[in-house]
Image (cartoon, rainbow, N blue to C red):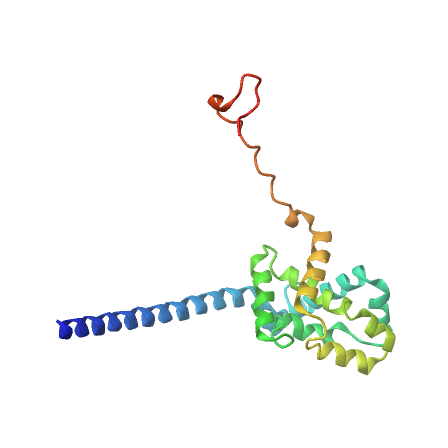
Length: 205
């Protein structure tokens, strides 16, 4: 009896190992499929022939610069006056989807917001603007080219991710309110059954 029990547990263990191996293979394939789908959406950023077209990275940086100027004209003008061009920092932010600026857990959280949004990488531009706005006072206080470029190129953890996301969502919602429609109110509760109503219409508890 004991021998059979041992054989059974070995068989169960072998079957479990096969399931785990099959699951890992499926995870690898699914992850590669998702990565390929994601890269197909941003591949134009890496095609030099498209750099100066409406599809290339230059156009994306120009959209970012226009958005920053619209959301905070004084800050955009101050950066322009000290010759801090968006290409010095936003090129890497946009082309690498923030993977060089944030820790991995924060990258995963940001990508969750990017992939859940129907306009997808439009939200990335708003997130980039939020990053600049969240250190606005620091940039204006120093008003120096070298300091500003270093602060923007080595953003690190100066601002918590949840603060950046809240600011980005506020900016995004202001321009795209249709994407932030509150959920519909639940339907009214039905009246109690007739047999639980008193003669004057009040419901019994």
